[in-house]
Amino acid sequence: MQPPFTESALLAIDRAHAWHPYSSPSSTDPVYPIRAAHGCCLELMDGRQLIDGMSSWWCAIHGYNHPVLNQAAHAQLDQMAHIMFGGLTHAPALQLVQTLVALTPEPLQHVFLCDTGSVAVEVAIKMALQFWVAQQRAEKCRLLTIRSGYHGDTLNAMSVCDPITGMHRLFARVLPPQIFVPAPRCRFGESCPPEDIAPFAELLAQHQHELAAVILEPIVQGAGGMRFYSADYLAQVRALCDQFDVLLIADEIATGFGRTGRLFACEHSGIAPDLMTVGKALTGGYLTLAATLATERVAHTIAAGDPGVFMHGPTFMGNPLACAVANASIALLLADDWQANIRRIEQRLRNGLAACRSQPNVVDVRVLGAIGVVELTEPVVLRELQPRFVELGVWVRPFGRLVYLMPPYIISDAQLDQLCAAVRQVVVNH
Ligand SMILES: *Cc1c(COP(=O)(O)O)cnc(C)c1O
Image 1 (cartoon, rainbow, N blue to C red):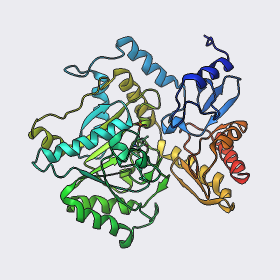
Image 2: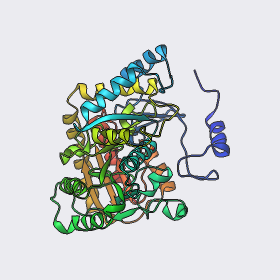
Image 3: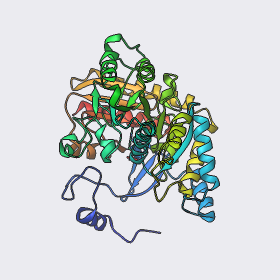
Image 4: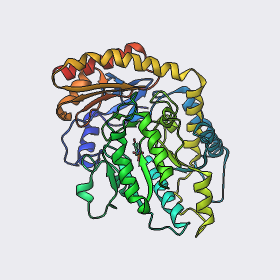
């Protein structure tokens, strides 16, 4: 069925009434109506095809309109789209929690399903707070994190985003003040020298009495700067959290489900966090769903304290449709040699982006798993760059000083080459 709108009619409504992410309602930035999406291609209203380099903000790992995921959604729709999770339960949610427990580090045994990544982070923070309240240690209520992080847009999640690139200035009066340590300087693949972990260790020791948890993105800091740091650093963070009796929350919302070459980024360090959040790629980008996983110790401590229950319960908790698609997406990922495929993408990105390194406006080029980043000397002017990428037949959406690629895992070599060529061309002429 054709939509009843012409492209210009859609754009008029968009301009008049639609609010886009991080944008103003009076924005004149370009926005592109999409008619359909298949495989790795987004189809514009005028019929042009764009190769997708973003996986729709890192979610659509199997591409668009995948027959297996479509089938899972259809089948579940015929059973039930949604029922409340209070007092009721169902196979799609139970299969999902069982799978998540099996795939994540062994100590994580209890799964709280929620709607979005930001809410999963709020839930993890609330679990950490209740963990200490339950032990009559309510003074342990602050968080420590590393700079350049991103954990979502709700208030507590914002409070642990990078204080400069995040939104602290605007919301300073209501954000809980958290403790920030410099982001690790040691890169992925390097060991972590003592001077790199020292500021973390010092602040942790100094604030241990008031700290509920450390929260960070393991190995890859995503929307806060696309940085890849040492697995050794993360291992030392885990040991220090144990030493100073502070919980560790690993936010795997961007890294989960294979993006870094491991199923979860914590595996690079062989560590288990006390709480872990997953989201984004969980449903292969079909429906909004996220989860917070907790260890036996965290769950039982909360249960043993007052009021003996965890105080959170979203309306759409455990949505069967989303859970059914998540189950299908995870099964699809694990069905073939996904690690070899990520290595293929990694190698192709390395080769394809390497030439950017010699450009005077490029600070750094880095690749890890299915993530390729070109860091520029100056922030990009999105209004100018976006149409150029579209003219080159690709969908790439840079932010700040970062032009990056996070393609769907089903991307072909030829499509990857086209994405890299477009990035090279735009960066050279920037
Ligand atoms: C995207 C993201 C979030 C927030 O998820 P939403 O679904 O956008 O609320 C939190 N943490 C990390 C690491 C993310 O990448």
